[in-house]
Structure formats: structure tokens, C-alpha cells
Image 1 (tube, rainbow, N blue to C red):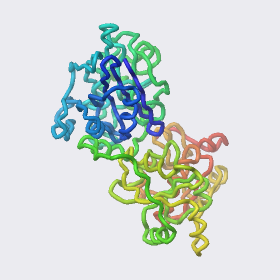
Image 2 (image 1 turned 120 degrees about the vertical axis):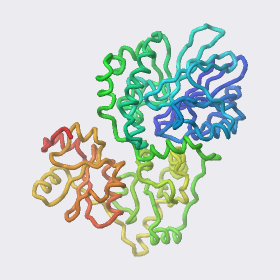
Image 3 (image 1 turned 180 degrees about the vertical axis):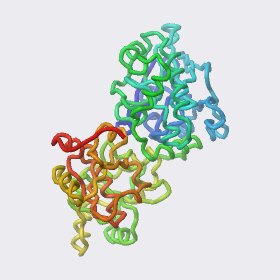
Image 4 (image 1 turned 45 degrees about the horizontal axis):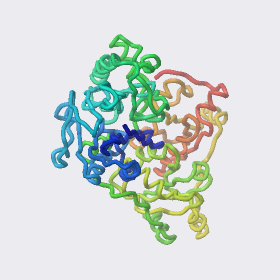
Length: 476
């Protein structure tokens, strides 16, 4: 049995190539949009991809199953579970084989068995694999977003991300029942989850690439709760706000993602064209470090630093139906291509051009003014807020805010800010803070681009606020 794990750090997402070395046949489970990586790996391992499948309709990235199956000439296997609302709309057109509870199939000498494990989503499946020349018992299971190392898949996304009212509690109870069945499996069974630490598909995911049923029975909080009501309360409590783009991913992955045809680096935009874009209020995303943006940026541009949170923040800010441009640090080789790839992984394919950061001094030298982000330390921010000179705004996730926040300060999570501009105070400067000062720069840039307010970034965030012993409170 051949097993290759592919892990995208910025999505915190895992996919798998599983092959039979004796017959040279393989299956890919939960592929992302970078289809070429699986084709290259299959060639290196001297196997042929004959099947492509996925555990569920993903919300956090755009699936590559449809495109990979077409490129590899493979059979597409898709869930038939979950009821009419959770069927893949493109299954018939692609000739997909529908699978569900009790389905079995073989890839060479590898035998797969399917369980339906609703809770995270209604259609969710997991795949047990048995290496039949060695044993008649499964070696492990690909658990998708059902069981992680140290956590379980959150059951609230249909309501909080896809806005399907009344589904959180029902899904949580379904998850409890799925786990009761699962926990009876033997200790030795290996588990290969679909996400690692940093994913928004759970609240406490571990970084281990794989685990076992026995270890999770010992260490995973969800396996320690036998009471259904207690489980429902615990699994729904403290879940982070889902990124704004999750709803769009659900829709696109159900309807069928458009083929990507490989990643394309946006062409560089010349100085004259750049000036025209600024004058015409084009959507321009500045991917430089937050401190560089704060020190000098084109007025009206949005700061989304090209780091591990780039996809999450960009997906909450950039419209899917609008062209946009990227300012990239020309001192970072490959920044333009990396940014375009990260955006395409969540379906943001309309990066029309790239602007090298070296164009900013030229733009300023032509008589334009670069804007700066005013900065304020936590001590000064607290004093000025107490005197009524500024209005503080906390843009952390609601669970972070509930755990502790500056006394009396309202909360609008960054992912919700584009839809809630009207709630931000007017009439006095707005000072924005987050946990450490990273998200607050993104939020500050959004508010500055909106205009009509003086906006200040609070350096150090709530972490520094708490270290200084400034007034804070907990709870909603």
C-alpha cells in the first residue's frame, strides 16, 4: 500500500494519494485545486489514478475533484447521502458514481469501505482502507472533517457560514451519534484527518498529521463526553467565526468548480496603467507586510499581507465577482505567483494584474501622496478612550472577545466588517485593535478605504492591553 499525504499550510488542508503498488492503481481523496501535484506524484510513484473522491462538500477551499478526475481519466466517486439539498449538482454530467453507507470498492488490492458520518455536514463520508494481501482488517480511515487530532468537525457551519437557519443543534446531535458509533472501533486503527492546526473547520485541531482511534479516545475532548446535551453545548461553544468566503465555497463545490487549467501569474502593470487604476478606484490589494503598508501606501488600497492568513483574510474581503489587482513586494521572489495561487485555491480567480512595490516611490515622486496608518499604543488608547476622545473597536473573533476584551468595547469580527460598516462609530476617531496587531491593520485599511472616518491602529492588540493590566472584562 502506497500513501502520499499532501498538505497545504495556508489552508491547513490535507489530501491523499493512496495506491496499490502491486497493480499500479491509485485513488486521490479530497484533492484541492492544485491538480498537477497529484498527477506528478502518481507519475513519480509509477501508479495511475483511476478514482477520485472526497469526504464531503468542502467549505474552506475549492475542490479539485472534478478537474483532477477529468485530467487523469479517472472515475469520480461522490456522496449520495444527506438528502436532496446535499447532492452534487454536477454528478450526473460528470458520470460520477454515487456512494454512501456500506459502499465498497477496490483500488487494486486495496479494499475500501464507506461510512456515512453526518454532523459536520449532512453528506459527510469516511473511507476505511484494508491492505488485503496483509490482512482482512482495515489499517486506517480517512476521516475528512469528521475526526481530527484532538478535535471533531464543527457542526455549526451550515448555519453560521451558509446561513441555513436552525441547523446547528440538529447537526451537533447527528455528530454525537456518528461519534458514538465511531468510538467503538479498535484502538490500532490509524486516522488520517483532512485538516491540521490553524483550520477554521474546528476549534482546537492538533498539528499531528495522523493519529489513532485509541489515542483520540484518550486525548480528544469529544470522546470523553457521554451525555448528548453536554456534547451539544460543548461542541457549539467557542467556535470561531467562519471566514466570509465559506458560503461561496459551499455553493461552488456543490454546483461544480470551474476547471482552473493551472495557476497563472498575473501580468505586471506598468506605471501609467497603475496611475489610471488608482484614479478609477480599482480594487487594489496590497500584499506587503503590515508594517510596510502602515509606513506608506496608496490611498484606497487594502492591506492583506501575504502570510499564512492571506487566504482567510482575502476570502473575507475580496468579492468573487470583481476584478482586482495585487501590489507585491518585488524584493520577495515569486510573490505574485504565490499570491495568485493562494487566491485561486479559494476560487478568487480574477487577479487581473500585479504591481511591483517599486512603483510606489515612482507614484509618490510624480506628486502623489502616500498614506500612512496612524499608530497608538495601548496605554494611550486606553487613556484617550476614557476621556471620550476616540472610539475603540475590537475586530477579533467573537470567541476571543468573549474570553476577554477591553471593558465596554464593541466587537465586529474582521470577517463581518465589510457587511457592518454602518455600525462603526462616527464623529470621533476609531481606534482598531485585535489580538496582536495583525488583523487590526487589515481592518484599519478597510475603514480608511471607506472614507468618512479618522482611523487609528492600536499596536500590540489585546495581548498587550492585558499585559499592561488595563481595564478588561469577559463574556458577551
